[in-house]
Length: 110
Length: 112
Image (cartoon, each protein chain N blue to C red):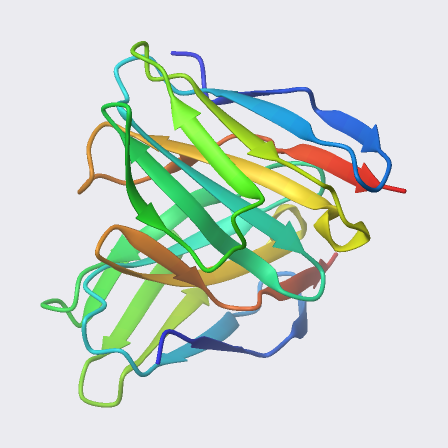
């Protein structure tokens, strides 16, 4: 019930391409959906977040698409850059507790 | 503004020992949460403290405990260490329970 399923596990894209990472959840009590970016040796850093009353949120090259009826949300990274190479985690929060997806290792080739 | 700081950054212990990790939140942040990150289990919530009280607890054994001081600094303790406790322990702080969390760099614990 608390699981957040994330795919793909790894993703390789060319510079300038679009990176898409998907997450699905079951618990309808989740009310906050953040995405985190983590570089090796660092803690996760908040990238962008959305609440379920909004279907899309865009910040620069990063966009979250949220489908409440399907209980799915995704991260789109436009014009992907080598500096975007990192591990990305989706998460969902309920009662102030974050449940994380398993992570996606993104590699952007120059 | 300084970020979340965690000490020590690296720690090596042997089975059966106990360990204490420290977290200093961002100034003004009163909520501190702890997470365990492992390759197998990913990021898992341990517990959250707000105003020196544990507000939420994840599904971990009682060997894992924590506390928060009046200055919002927090410590996490693991007693009777097991090999499986080897992990990156992350601390995150936020102003209040409904705000975004900011993570520290973590403490890498290795249990031999």
